Length: 200
Image (cartoon, rainbow, N blue to C red):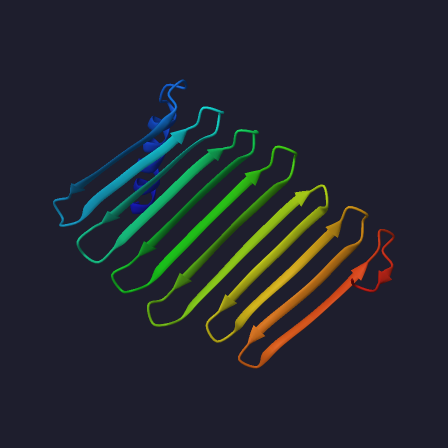
């Protein structure tokens, strides 16, 4: 319930900011804090800009505490460049009174010439020193595509896998693991016909 409230309040703030007069170039910012009866607080801010050449952006954050050691915060933002490129990001983090925590976030961007990138991930911890995370990133453009995943956990090290395809159809598949035992790596490449080739 707390997470829903945080995200809903943030969405409202960003909506209000995005409806400001389109002709107004410059910067704006607003912030506030409210004390709650349970000893917690709610604070939020929103800020943005609009440039004379069409660039614009807005960003906001809302944080809630309940006075019992629980807290949650969420942020989001969106931007547009003067040439038409766009980007957006959102994330949220919560912490419980027992010390455990969770985080998730993601972003996306599109270039004016058709290139794009997407990334999302999450992480969590139990408050006792154990944590894990994972993130996936994809990208595409005139030079090919990329798909990468990174994950890790306490005592298990970190593993990254990559799949990439060049504009000529050549592909690369690889995996790298870093742990207390050292670094291991494996990779292979194929051409557009699926035949194995030497990796560059």
